[in-house]
Image 1 (cartoon, protein in one colour):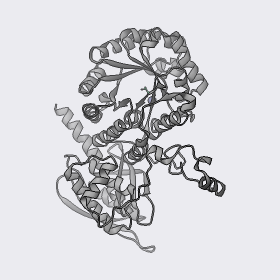
Image 2 (cartoon, rainbow, N blue to C red):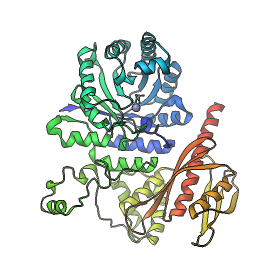
Image 3 (cartoon, rainbow, N blue to C red):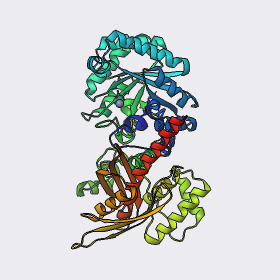
Image 4 (cartoon, rainbow, N blue to C red):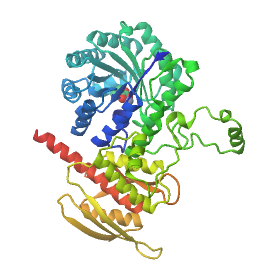
Amino acid sequence: MRKIDLFDTTLRDGEQSAGINLNTVEKLEIARQLEKLGVAVIEAGFPASSPGDFEAVQRIANTVKNSTVTGLARAMKNDIDISWEALRGGEQPHIHVFLATSPIHMEYKLKKSPDEVVDIAVDAVKYAKQYFPLVQWSAEDAFRSDKEYLVRIINKVIEAGATTINVPDTVGYATPAEYGALFKYLKENVRGVEKVKLSAHCHDDLGMAVANSIAAVENGADQVECTINGIGERAGNAALEEIAVAMHIRKDFYNMETGINLKEIKKASQLVSRLTGVVIQPNKAVVGKNAFAHESGIHQDGMLKNRETYEIITPELIGETDIPLALGKHSGRAAFKDRAMTMGFELTDQQLNEAFDDFKKLADRKKEITEDDLFVLFTGQQLADTDTPIYELHNVQVQYGTNNIPTATVTATVPSGETVTVATTGAGSVESIFNALELAIKGEVLILDYRVTSIGKGRDALGEAVVNLRHNGLELTGRDVAQDVLEASAKAYLNAINRQLVREQLRKEELMK
Ligand code: KIV
Ligand code: ZN
């Protein structure tokens, strides 16, 4: 079977989408899960774009051993130098250099002639090659580029030392037949194409990213770039789980394999959704909550007689387990630790102890502890807090009545170490909490989006709040979980503000270097 490499760009193209801001610990957690999933390449970020990205890429490169770690760079010496510093500790240092090649990008964005663009690309690849054994070069907006020009510039960058050539449909304009034909054309016309990997990178503006990626593979692409849950710029990128499962379920047709450990898909999907705050649409292929739900009577009847009547993918294939939970109020530490390990979490003794304390508190308040609850407890522990002084919520109290003005009182520690208590009103309970928190942080905050969802089923399910806000000119997303949605909302608000403090701290440390 032909092996197709999956290049995951959740932490770069995915993280680039509106409203997503992951911190280093969260990125590292996702990278570890991507490694377990078995992706060939992890694009961990864009090291020259910010100190936060640099730090995350460096930590991921130094940690991940079984997937190649790469970082994005513009075709500029400075970006390449910074990327080398971030990636040099990796097992197989790999860089991803890009430059636009379509007429519209060259004329209006780069303001360069096609010949100048060839020279810049060649110089950048040669420069990168001095450091990196593996250099991927991307022709940004390749699909809307002149095909003959594309062959000319690709010939030159291969001569300069590029080891992978990526051909993105940056604006999601291609159809499967056209995108496939472009790969066929490149296979037939590029000199030395057999020495490099050809890569597909598709955006989903017309809903064809996965189909286009597969068309590329059928026409000679060796690698597909994709993201978990299909998150990414605008309408997103091709969804990794859809490509991996399609190749597996239809291997009779494609005769290809991706090397993905399919059993890790559900966990990867949940983790990315939880940490980014991007909800998965219920009918999303493979990982949506209705992907295996059979509603109509005729379908249910068929399923009872033979599951294959309506089921082409089993939930077990992607690691969706229905293991009955023998854990409850009376469970001991050993059983708890065992469950953490079965679920794939690697926690220190201290993290396990803290998670166990939280578990006991939760078990006192909640009848049934579900796998979803444990996932929240374990990921919460894995994402240890930073050393930066931050805001911490101690108490939130709300007075609400249909005929009263809602009033919230909030007590929190502020970064100076002081504890403050503030009270104010609002049009509703949540607004009164947000208004009180605005007083506590002494700043102006614009709420852009706010969502509450339940984790798992039942009236006593945990509530997760996601708050997207603007503060000091930055758009930030915060999230948190609590048994009460008002508490979760207050914590999510402060989580967003704390993310900004951590970023500022990193920037200060960078300036002091
Ligand atoms: O969509 C795109 O063209 C990109 C490049 C940077 C590879 O993300
Ligand atoms: Zn992209």
